[in-house]
Amino acid sequence: MPTTPATPTTPGTTNTQGLADWAAPYITNYLGQAQTLAQQPYQAYEGPLTAGPSTLQNQAFTGIGSLTVPAGIGQAATTAGDLATRAGNTQYNAVGSDFGTQQAQQYMNPYLQAALNPAMDEARRQADISRMADAGRLTQAGAFGGSRQAIMESEGRRNLMDKQNQMLTSGYSTAFDKAQQQFNADQTRKINEKQFGAELGLKGLQTGIQGAQTQGQLADAQNRATLANLQQQLAGGEIQRGITSEGVKADLDEFNRQRDDPYKKLQFQREMISGLPVGSVTSQSQGLSGVAALIQGMGGAAALNTSLSDKNSPLYKLLGNLGINLG
Image (cartoon, rainbow, N blue to C red; front, top):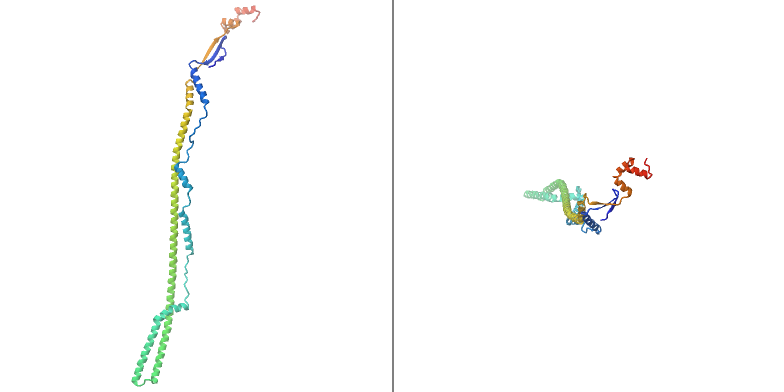
């Protein structure tokens, strides 16, 4: 190790500072190691610095990317819309037809054929029986073919016509009333049937709408279940990624430990001698001048001061002889 000249502390002496003999090899060695380490090229870490997406996260991302509105929801909305339109268009006519001539004939004819015509036929039959009975009585009386017979037959025909007229009048009146009642009953029945059919149709449409709503709810529940599964995958993927991140950090920390190990050992070597007296000072004596030798011979600067102030001292007298007046 080079030495450094020091300021002399004693006249005629030179101090030189350097390393102690016991410390010089040690310090020289670790300084050489430091120089070698300083000249090493940069050592890059070639491993991953971050953890990429985990397998579960990639699966979840794929699932999220392919999410669409469930087909069941669209189908349910279309079905419900169509059924609602049909329900809005469902109407029934609550007003029946008017009771006119055509309706009267339609409803009266069955009654006339079933009730009035047989009664009219029976009246004619009874009139014929009476006429034949009268003819028999006239024959027995020897009056058959006479004026009396003509009067009786004329009276019988008049009675038959009167009776038939009464039957027709009463029968048509009754037939009309019956026809009108039957017509009204049929109209009420038809209206009720239409109303029942319309209500049944509306109930069917409402049931269909409820079914469509249920389908949409099920599709929505399925979609929410899918989203919940994806969220679980993301949560599990985050755990996976965390484990991978721990591995990446451990690899990087180990790389840093291995890279820094020589520097830490060098630092350790330096700390081992920290505070120890590793330096040394070497003193070398030099020749003294006449004055310096005189001062040294007189005991130093303190003795010199005493001699200069004492007029009886040899130094004071010597200086006086040399023409130096000290006062």
